[in-house]
Length: 342
Image 1 (cartoon, rainbow, N blue to C red):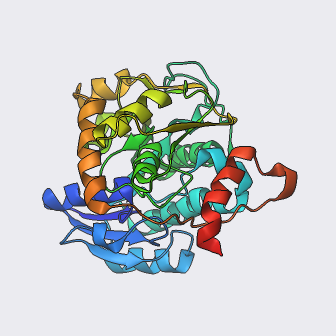
Image 2 (cartoon, one colour; image 1 turned 30 degrees about the horizontal axis):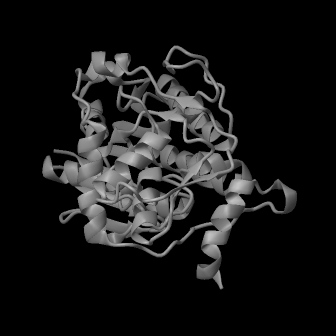
């Protein structure tokens, strides 16, 4: 078995991945700054190091001490719709933090690097989005993710460190951060129901997405280090079934046992209307997995959310720009946070 680093391993997808790696017999170190994760999510048998990928000295010392075989880089500031309003945070974390890891991995002889990318690299491209499409990111988050993908390609070609990148989209499931008012629609909706607030849907809720259950994604990710056909490539990974955001809201309130819970339609925001990907390439390399149906995944998430209970809102950042540049939808979120920040 191998010695693995999972960045963001106390967060949502990273904690599921760390749990799977430990169960498969690997030794696991988790690096997480706990801004969006929780130490309690780190599985038994894994070591937690509290810190950020932006701390170059910490990253270097961690790699020198542990001599990792594999790196699974899942730490990120993952809020594409707000990323242009927090440019420094976005690029410091998502780009320069990734470069810190790549440099340390090269210096210590890491044999494989897995990167959690995003469909945000495609921007307002054709639908379904395919790996053969020319990426044209429409926001700062997508820019950073694409830059890391390209740096990993250069690193493998010139410095011979294999990598695989996974372009994920709308992943949901148990252990999502319900405190975050900006990200993760499923978690936001469950928390709003438990807090007695209406479910907030932007515009008419007709945005089309493919909501992907977290364990389906992790099952694919864990195969990459052993599958040389996956090396040097970026894959779309996620559900092949699409739903509208309004359909998601209705599924969440049904699973929560409150099918008539109110839904509030807020002003529309600047976002891609239809986002889903073709996953043929991933399925040809990793096998044609069976997507967990939305109703099943939402039901599992509802059981976890009910046990976790409602949570107070918390944002791990402030919008860097102000005045007229703050979009109306962000002002709505700021108002929800105002009682917490007094």
